[in-house]
Length: 116
Image (cartoon, rainbow, N blue to C red):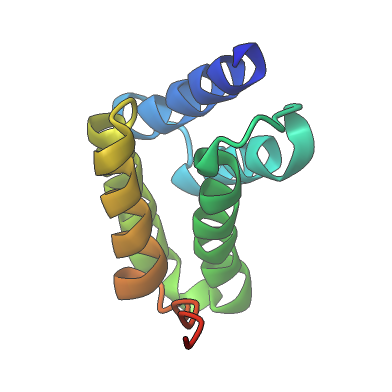
């Protein structure tokens, strides 16, 4: 749990900076992506690591693949950051956050349920 807590604290610091500093949302999003995709050793079953890697990967890819839409992508980054700070720490609310961002906003496919 210690690794997960350190990971969450590091993510929290970066997303808070998106809201409360003049730093580039894109640059901070890259840092969150780096943390979530291997920058911090987290292997304790915390869903946040995998889900945040996908969310922030999609958001940073948006800037890289469609630079003309950078302002729109960065607006989404700030919204994702604000919502994460509200959700983080309540696993049920986090699950709703992941579902909304992964599927409803970013359009990732939901896994099909196994047929009986």
